[in-house]
Amino acid sequence: MMGVGKAVAHSNIALAKYWGKADAVRNLTAVPSLSLTLAALRTVTTVRFDDSLGADELSLGGAIVSGRPLSRVSKLLDNVRAQAGVTARARVESVNDFPTAAGLASSASGFAALAMAATRAAGLELPLTQVSALARAGSASAARSLYGGYVSLGARAESAERVAAGADFPLEMLVAVTVSGEKETASTDGMGHTQGTSPYYAAWLLAAPAIYQQVYAAVLARDFDALGPAVEQSALAMHASMLAARPALIYFAPGTLRVMERVRAFRKSGGRAYFTMDAGPHVKVLVEPSAAAELELELGKLEGVTQVLRSTAGPDAYWVEP
Image 1 (cartoon, rainbow, N blue to C red):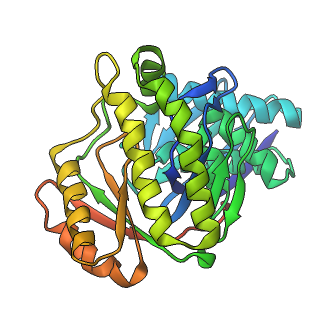
Image 2 (image 1 turned 30 degrees about the horizontal axis):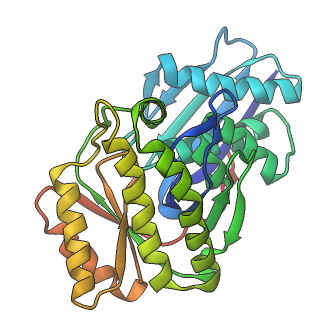
């Protein structure tokens, strides 16, 4: 048996963060999250099932990958094989057009594209909610990358759902890249470490759902003045729980703090922008389109900022011809 599927998915950046698992085995999140899918951060993945293969194979950006990343990919493929009645192993080729494993949610777009491509290659015709659930089992944030615009993943939810289209609330996001290369502590490891050692983790579990509700309501109301402060609070509360872990998880780089300070100064001067950060050193800045070009230029001049990516809201994941 040989089947081929190719898909494109876009990374998403959480405006209301999740950090921690309610069920690590099933990969269910402890708190709800809400994200914006980004057009500028894209993964393209091809899956080929082939009876001649003795084991699954994975290449990322042209480099052969083994170990834990391959195991995670094989686990998702096993779920697809079980649903489709397929026994063949697969060759997976994935390419990101942005830095991988650096805090830019490459696992989100990667597993979303993998789920889309694998189901097509296996001949499955599943609704997007089921593909989202397949992707979530590999990476919780990947559940959200199946959808464009603003997307929610509830606490313990199997799949994500769309909250609003990007065109309904047309904001942009600037990504200030501060450090090249992979981060030292992967998100999954960091979550487990925080849950197990941080005295602030319980406070995070209490605070996060209320912040999520503020973000959710602000998106529906198209209220940027309400959305921005909640977005910053979500990111800083999440990082506070990490900083209190033992030993502390510090994802910030010097450039991270410079970007945060510049965004705050930009607001004081009348600009409209708010920052957020994931488990990595890069800063993402939510900004109104009218101010995006000016702030992009300012951030690019900062010491420690190597690149500024500018993005509008991205689309649903989709299939392409192999």
